[in-house]
Length: 118
Image 1 (cartoon, rainbow, N blue to C red):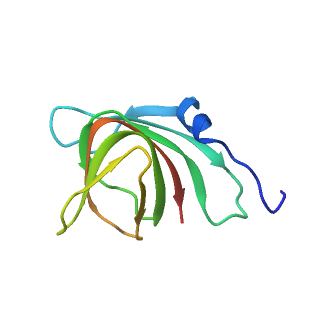
Image 2: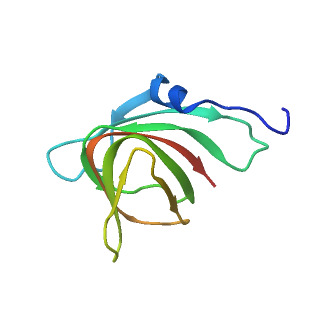
């Protein structure tokens, strides 16, 4: 693999077909989010996982334990870290979640994001 690899474009993130669609494992409330993803980098020698992820409206507790950097490509949501105020996120926003960040996702409009798990 070359040192620098172009993985996708923002338009590519918006249009990429997703796999693994299904309900979030532990929804909160009657509206159950459907999630899907598409890996962009699947190389065991790299210590990061990179891909595209999408969720329909609903809410649940964050299950990911890895640190994450993400760019919201479309949609609107909020994330409330445990014992902190909610953070509103929408298209164009960049967010960082330190390792083991726990809290509540509330998806108000289908969200698609580009993520890097570290």
